[in-house]
Length: 234
Image 1 (cartoon, one colour):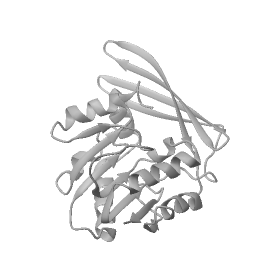
Image 2 (image 1 turned 90 degrees about the vertical axis):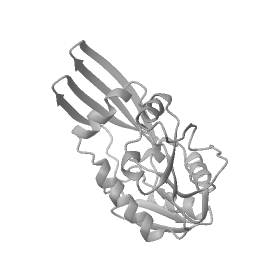
Image 3 (image 1 turned 30 degrees about the horizontal axis):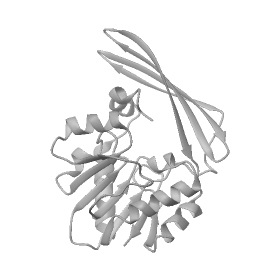
């Protein structure tokens, strides 16, 4: 995943216009519309380096979970009082349940097969308290994915210059993104590469995965960044 680019992750996404504060505000509104439980405990699955965490701690008692040790290390350094767990979204098992379980930034795509995506949704739903909500921001729909394209992002800070270029290909139902980073600092220039593979699923397949958990299932088309958001109510 972001094993090589963890230290420049925030800079790259800031250059792409990602607004963590605005997303957190929209997320809070989604929670208020649908949550019926009285508590405020929140599990952030695939939390990365904690991009949303800092904007949500005033409202929610957050626990983080991610599979990438490097990103978790950054999250722990930023938020030393928040508990974090290193585990896979597909089969993690914690000793408590939460009022809100969420998986944002399209991280559900890293469950690369339909079976693993369904299992991840079930695993997350198993950690939701009665009246609580499960919120999942999907990866791109199979029908909207455009393979054989090239994309670029650029960071231009005084002591950090980054060019991130990636190509997209399709292998079965998996989107394969090969990222190349040219990273310049006062110490020199480095070339990094990462391969990201994310499963592509239809709207109907996500809905079916939610409904299989027995939760009341809803969908909001706009979501946080225009990719929609699936909502399960326990």
